[in-house]
Length: 573
Image (cartoon, rainbow, N blue to C red; front, side, top):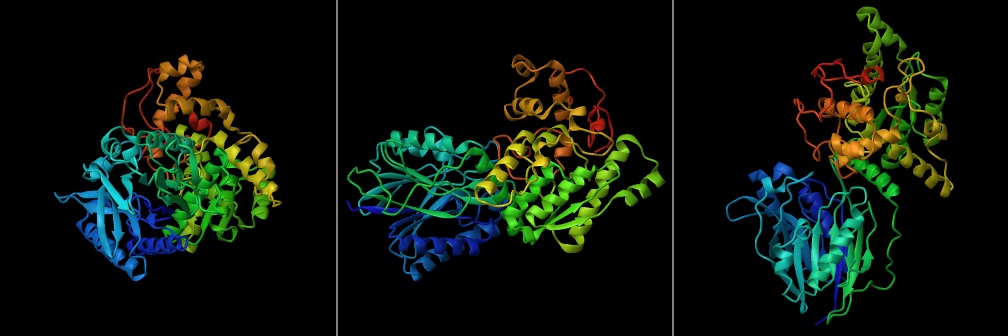
């Protein structure tokens, strides 16, 4: 039994880019060969990108993927790697013609072996059960006398199936291809699961994961290897392309890292969330062909954080920040916006909205919430005009807390093509901002976010003296209730049993339930928690179910301002 070097190639695939993804495979295999690898393992559906959703159902795409896989096998042989075993996630076709999620083993210019994913997730962000046909047979790859089991992602999350079937097959290692999206705290869960499966099979486990972003999903990489006892052998970095090479000596000896390889330091949860948001924005911009982004700079913490994220994602020279003061904009907010722009070095512009608001009010004679919403909508018109004229992607700057309770103006501050902090609660916004400044300080760089934007009380500044806390609970309390109601799906009774004040629970639940129509129209944004609005949480817009709250008149609410937070009709959907 000869020792094997196995390379885990953590790469950033793009959905539908068959040629581009094949080029990534060829590059990864060349790098692995230079490191002496005998087996190269790439992530789930690497060749097609992931998730491909209903592209999998198109016959034209199925045929193109099959042809590209065959050509890739030939190209690898032409590159001089025909003697290596390359395991690539791709799209296959079942006997009945349905698409399958597969792992193809390429060797000698041919597709030598194919494994079909058994367990098809049908929860959260996944709809695989609707799209794919499931496999039923375990597959073991034999290389130099060593037996390597193949499975794909969900196959190790569910009991039974191929892992249980391979328990008595004398495996020397289990190779797991993954397209596992990032969410806060998920890394520790993966490691525990890998430890359990390694113990079940009594062999090391090699876990390779995608890196990169696809629409609202972020894949964090963090590929790793554990030995038969579940102890970490090696790990790849998070949120970047990387390659991890581990030697499998054979004869029951534990796997080991080649000389010179080290395990990267673990990133803290706050840093990981920040890097996930940056990667989510960067890939959305790059993969959709944008060259720059534009956002409104209010001087507040949300737009400040989004500006910092945007600069880290695409470079400050590709970020346009627009200050759009009204008669209610405070001097310190205008100063903070200018200070932020100077710290980051972005393209800073000032466009007062007063004359435009005055023109509308002169014709429509608006007051109250309608007048406040008008200010937000004028700002949205300005940003979209810049986008139409110059081509940048408009970024919405709202956070998850605001999105939950509808604290935004539809067609106003909710306008945009992407929302980087859409899944970040307000309290986490402050945490991310502090972390980013502290990281800059530690690196001897200019702190990108003015500390005054972090410490001052949040306000929409659409009327004199306005503060968010006028009509909303303090964000620490609001976020606690939202985590219970939205992320843990607790009902009114459970929230009250947790010790929350009945009036607070009633207000928050009312606002959350009645803002569903508005959330449906909000831009995409990267998922960073276990329960993001969108694919994770799908509720009807039209519904009379309430968590035993006081009776109220039906109808949607537009709550751009604290006045608008009250549960009364403002905008029709």
